[in-house]
Length: 479
Image (cartoon, rainbow, N blue to C red):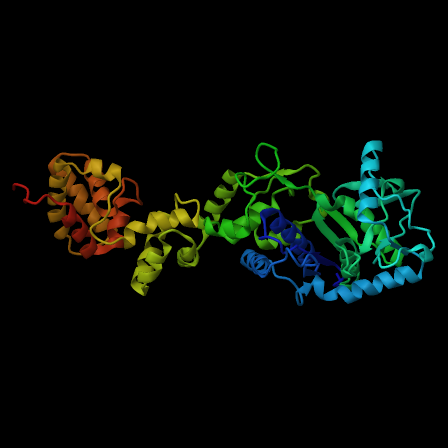
């Protein structure tokens, strides 16, 4: 297939890359990659007052973290203002745009009249065919498009189907403001044309824009790209997505400990389906993604599904890679710098060795970090309330005997310590759990952990015996 498909992701840098924007970027990326095409990145920063460098950096960082690469250089829309004005001059010369001198007061009166009469069309076209010599002195006009006033505007949308607007309901939209700056509507059309965009994939909150932008394309004599307007993401209860539902920046999901591969997999299934398949490799996504499979109803965000996917990918990830991923979020996690400051090759090796037991129950990297805390915690351990309650005087006396038993183990491994503890429990006439639970509390400070024999193996002889000693009664137990 020739390199003919060109998509674009075009965020406005007035805030972070939110989850809906990330899904839009993913859909554009998959559609282009699946057809050996290109995805371009354009920062729509014509609103200079609200556009910030921090937001631009967050968008770029978010896309990079998600693994969504773009082709070519980033296009910054505000740098193309001269080209936008050039297109308007072309429209003026062809009689397809005009100067409008309506005052703010007049425009307000038109809006009020439209509301009273129940009309969606706000501007009454009073300067559309007026002689320019009528222009009031000293007033800088806006430039408006001379939009069609009869007939229909039709978009054959690849998600929404055939969408029709009556032209009598659509305004002569402003192309250039009175200060000569281009409007969003104009800039998007000129940029998409100049960047050879073939497919516009964006949220369905832009659907009405599609009709207005088609008028600009038609006036300039340009082909209209194929369009696909994706339903927005709602919360689990069907209401508009809010922060409590998950309307957060991509950076927040990273800080919460989600893997980019899991978030990608979750987002691709948010409104798109391929049979009943839930787990997709990147290659499978690229091979199977297509626009007609996107549903027309709003997708519902579900943290439980995201957590389940994340847990799946964590369990499947090689242990060394999982440790590296955990290290990557340490600056974002409370207490993460404590671990980063003491990280050594030996400690990293301990963490890798502990991963099989740690990752079985963890759903996020943050949970994994918390579950690993016992490995690198400073002595004496801080015990949680349940562990404190478990370590009664009798339990500590038992631990003293267990410590004597373990200190005699010659070759310290999971199996050898297990054999020693089972022998001790059998000789003492108690169940293994009666030994393992206080031992777990003393070694980890908690009542839940990976299997106790794995804990002993990861901590090693010296650290395990030292931690036990910290919890023993002051007097040795009777023989």
